[in-house]
Image (cartoon, each protein chain N blue to C red):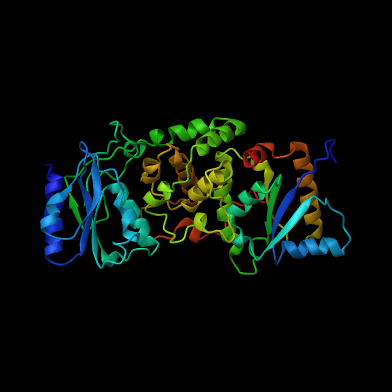
Length: 286
Length: 143
């Protein structure tokens, strides 16, 4: 049992006992190997089920806006640095009142997927030690973000011709089965009624057909522009292995370049598409 | 008209207050411009949702124009500033997805600029004529 697991259990038990929170969102041991699965802990006794290891890949923030957590009173959430960024986004957009949420941050050296691979987000991580929390578990972990690793595949795609890029994405989007796992896993896909579910008018074709797949995937990426904190929950959840993060990273880079903004940093700041500057780029408009 | 009977189909999303009136001015002034443009009036460029653009291509557009009030002239004070930010990002997104940015235009045309409307439409139509139909997209949606 790692130190962090012990600290998480201890803090969770304390908060539950004192009645500060109604439940704790965390990870418990999964049914297979060292996998973990999300769990909602409601009592002091149950808090012994909480664990933390490098297989805690899920971003639990997505559960905050779903039942049964949504209608609970105060809730604690165990969060890695990347998950904390999405919590900042939720607070910033008034989705979760800060006073109703206790953040139990945990330091992290990076997670691993089923094949033991380290995700790109961990190579590029600059929040191994979270900076926004109520309590923190674990010793300080230094970050050495590798931005080149983060943008490597984006650069490869951008080096292609228009036609090649179009073919590349056609092939990728053709794999989409429209399960909306990307949407469900995303902590910041917050619309109670998604545009893709509305049919009067039907903006996005619902079948797993190239037509709707193209518009769905582009719209998903655009709705996260300036909001995505690059937690990679969408790409991790995608059963079709579509490199969704490439789209999100391009948007994040453009937001940084055009509007000097980075998502998931400051809960008090204005998201870039909720504000404007009089001297924003006008060069592409006739 | 091209030999095979194809003509560019251009969809223009124009704001109610400036570009629509500018276009109206061109009409009442009896100016001629390419008949290839289908105009869709929106209250403000701030209403423009990138889905409109995708939908236009899905419905067979070869080029899409979005046009509204000059910065500072928005009827709702700041709709076009918000729109400009959306355009900035969405252009990058569709370019990254391999959609040819030359098929998408943005312009500010005021109610007094009937002449500019004529110029923009004629030039854009000629440009799309040169590029030909948006075959890649059509092939995908008709599949």
